[in-house]
Length: 243
Image (cartoon, rainbow, N blue to C red; front, side, top):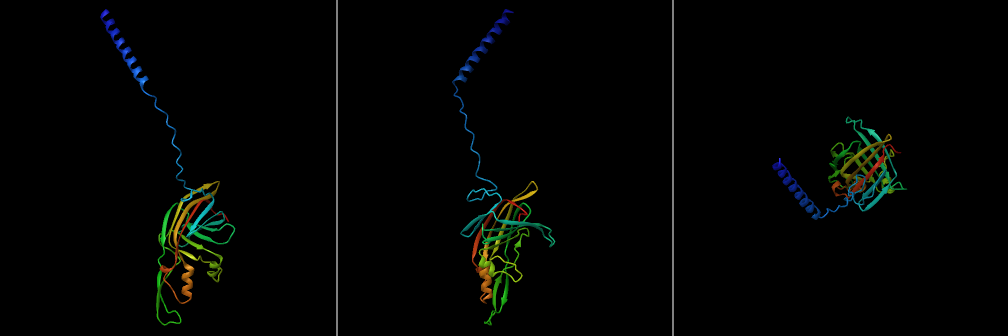
């Protein structure tokens, strides 16, 4: 028994010494400083316009060439295509605040996703008076080729331009048509039964009014030779079916 008591005594002494050494080492270690939490990431917001970071809720931002404007004045409605596709389209007419022009008319799919369409002008031959030499030139077509889900966009720059393009049945045509159009529906929400649309579109627009004026004057030009401008439209949480 004395032998075992001696062994246990030695073990107890070893454990005590190890505990003292560990405690001493632990006391010598510097405390780990508490780092402040990282700041929240505010670099992206699905409702923000890219270049300004301005939050857009139930509003629209427009950049057309060197012009830029924003508005809360718009109307929307939804129609179902009856031409075989049976797709649901959202139509948006937006106006410069307090004025009838400039404005745009956008047709965009009621479905989240990105779609791109391009103008595919047709070539015609005509005999413009008073010359007797046939003239060939390209003319635009009203619908874009490629993705049938792309939609359409027309821009009305001024009252005088819209008046010049008014048809006999009262229909007004935009004086700028898209060469290439990309529409993006980022989000469709439903809040208390109200549909909210967030998205954007970008396009290269050509001066349709100048092209048409040249054609009517007997000096037609190719669509490719008309002036072009870039357009970007962003909208957040638009109330659809608002009139």
